[in-house]
Length: 322
Ligand code: GYE
Image 1 (cartoon, protein in one colour):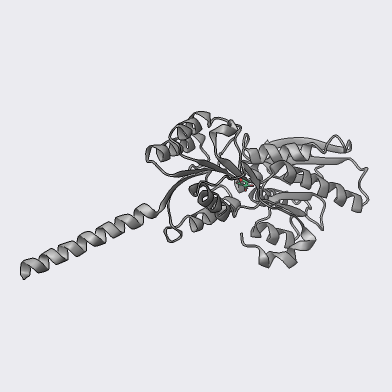
Image 2: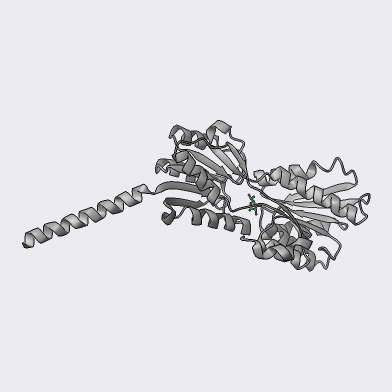
């Protein structure tokens, strides 16, 4: 009887282990090579991915914060391949330099979904891309500025502009720059004084704006390629007793439209925030589910985005989720 009991118990244990193994092997194994943690936008995107690719939703997520270092990112992807993940999600820090590792993923038959920033790698090397239209964001910023100057009777005034760019070589930086600068030729009175990278960080925005203020005595507009850079630029302007914001002199344009950016608009510090949506997790999961069923997915998918001028901020802030 004792023996039988032991046997029964052993059987139960084996059954449980097998169930557990089955359960974990049912999880879809996904690797996400994230850019870093440089901004509030980035933290919101990480949260969206982690919430979506949770075990309770049926995923096993290998998450690597690449600390804004491309080498780390390439190594992370290679490790995902070596570990046999089923899907790779990549947010490329910069546009160039991923061809070899993407070829390795392709040869290992692992679909790669690119999110947010894009790469110049050949389209055959990845399955699809989902993110923002950065060129359109830049164009939207220019359109807003044009309308704002016109509404204030300043459309033929000389307008001196400085740009605090994002990480050089990233598609978010190159797209926003390209979009905004495309409007310069149709506004001969707009004078782009300088463009320097603040690396999408608050400290970077502060340092670049401080240097701009020292060098250029008459800045009319500062374009900050993300909210965090704008916060840094605002600190630099305050420190130098410069007047800025909707009730002041220097026009402040930001990108991302995070909750913090909305608050700064309400506080009278930012004129307009061009939305960039980081909540890409559910969309990427939808793509993975389709790929798993063998369905086709669109090669390129843009997320929907808007332009939020300061006067709309108070009504909208409570509905913002990031
Ligand atoms: O604007 C910025 C982040 O790639 C769109 O990266 C993203 C940008 C975003 O650090 O805040």
